[in-house]
Image 1: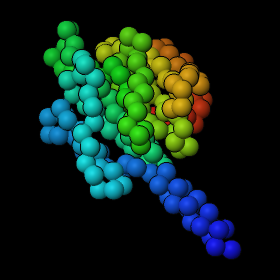
Image 2 (image 1 turned 120 degrees about the horizontal axis):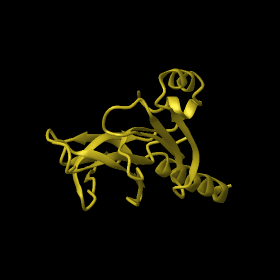
Image 3 (image 1 turned 180 degrees about the horizontal axis):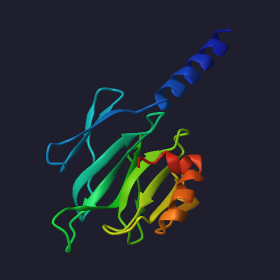
Length: 171
């Protein structure tokens, strides 16, 4: 009986420890640093990528096992930094990056299952086109793609018919 209780206790502690790590994410006033608060009340500074000049859109996964943000890079053609990479960090502080393949990543979300992310890419100016991707956090694999075309009539239809994972991304 005591052995069963001990085994159940160890299992319960293991599940509780893996239930969540990140509790809060706070950007500095100039967006150059991102402070993360863990379940143990520790504060961790999020790492920045080599070309990154700002952080943007920090979010914590629904199960609190991951935290993510947009890495903004300087842009030669604009007076502002551009979000080119989505960065996701797990509770062990391992980093996975999702690069916009030449297009900036303007918005994103963790999916409700906390096992994937969705993000929206588009050009900087002058189009209604938006490209969405859903990717696995485990291996970065592309799970789905969806587009809102530039043509306004087609764009309206595409928005109405968008799958739920696309609608997770803020518009």
